[in-house]
Length: 266
Image 1 (cartoon, rainbow, N blue to C red):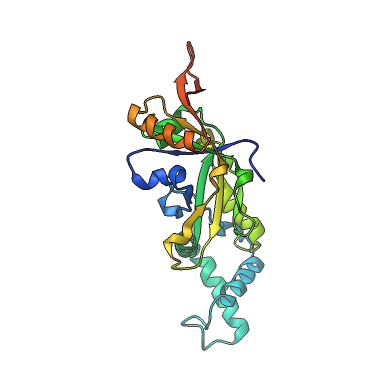
Image 2: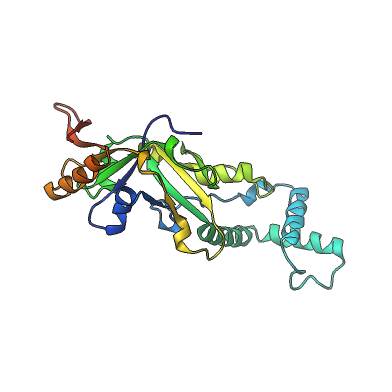
């Protein structure tokens, strides 16, 4: 699902590569471990949902199908006995089963997934505090429809915020179900971000340069400066944007209100 309006990338000026989203039109697919939410892309199946022996046997079949050899300690058993014993062992050590799965899954996700986070608003107080160095940075406003993603495999959508942890069974293996849950569901405390994100799956040990998405400069429709931006950084942005026909706004406090407003300055 495409965003309804512009999407914003918040940045600060004092880290050079943070400027790339504007001056190089380059966005980075961050690893989940680089994000500030410890649950991001780490929603795991709940093994407590395997509440019958039949479900544990089905999971044991899946477990065995993922291995290239019979697990140690089971090779002397007949085939049917292997699945039964494995299912019983996994069930009786469910806490360890869950922990082992989470460890393997989280590592694979961190190696193979990348996320670009945007917001669908540029006037939220906390966004400027958290992602633009205490109201001194900037936000780039992109028109998503002008991104060239035709040959770029990615998953995009609005983040959905929930107060309850998703109930995902270990028996669900349809990635059309799993990926949106892992990528697009976050805890409700993050709702203020109004996040829209892109996610992409990478191969193991892929070159870090492959994690960059280059977008057309025409996709940048505005840049919004923080209320406490320095004159030097304001002039730097205005000069670049005038050359490239990009509108520049600045955030101001609304009078007699806790709200923020943006006003065009060049």
